Image (cartoon, rainbow, N blue to C red):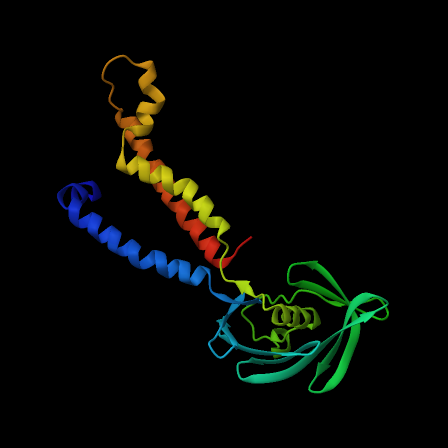
Length: 242
């Protein structure tokens, strides 16, 4: 049926595909390269006023970060419930450290260990690891609001981002390369249906040789698999699944 429609309305189909691509590709790239901060599987998009906002599973996050001389003040709200934090970067015996304040009162001082980009561990004076990455697992039950507020490692990470003006990107462009690995052969196979057949078999046959029904069947299966792979890689790229 689809083949019949394509043959009957080929020009209209091409125009529709080009028009759809002209809309979807810029829209996809816009979302992929959005600036913001990843937090608990939610992407907080940077707004024009400098704040960061995002929503996930009915939880609405709003983040304001204001740089100070040697740290940052953080105002973070979860569904309208706000808390104020301040992080002051210091050193202890030459090791990066920080003082953490909540609502104006110091709650912790400890050293900071950077394991990877934007991932920090905070260690107190007793050399106990206080916390690391903020992770919330949804179980379908009503969660404690405390779980949605940032821990010390996240507060320090936000402070570093603010001072260096280096934030996250929503997507991972690397997946565009993998999508292209399937997309280019798929385009060539659709545009020139006998291309790969001739490249593979023509040298073994003298004279004309047409692909069999069996070949055509698996050609369609291959196109479907390639299209699915492209969609998966594009989706993974947008969600920054690495």
